[in-house]
Length: 152
Image 1 (cartoon, rainbow, N blue to C red):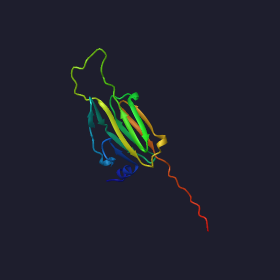
Image 2: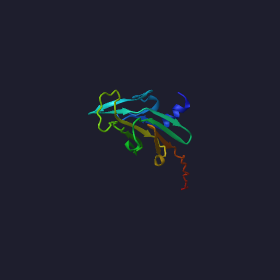
Image 3: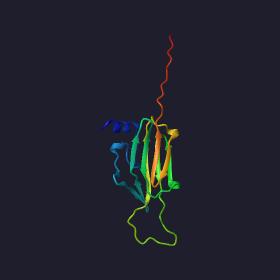
Image 4: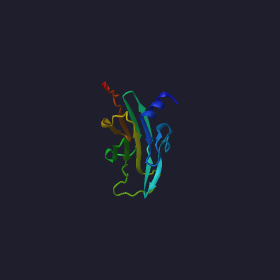
């Protein structure tokens, strides 16, 4: 394992909704070609989207593949150091037409990320373009506190 992979494991851990916490390099549930179905609830499926992590000295960037999802269909939240993503694609139904045959499964994308204390949670940003969500997680500046000592 090279230094970059070790650093990524220390900075951010990736988990899906139905898995225990695992480092990003050991995450199961996503293939090289895209997200895989996590489970099916009723008629809607849930998919774990494929994610790439890119790290620099100043930030960690998550690149998430969520094809067919408009900006209004993306819900991104941070609660208790957990970044949660839910993305709902448009159904693709054309008014006045009915679906005769389909090979493409439609469902929600869901993924959660446990953030380390090194991430500045107040300044997280995200951009969506052509089905690719780019989440920027800036790193916090290290805080050094001088502790005064008094003589007794």
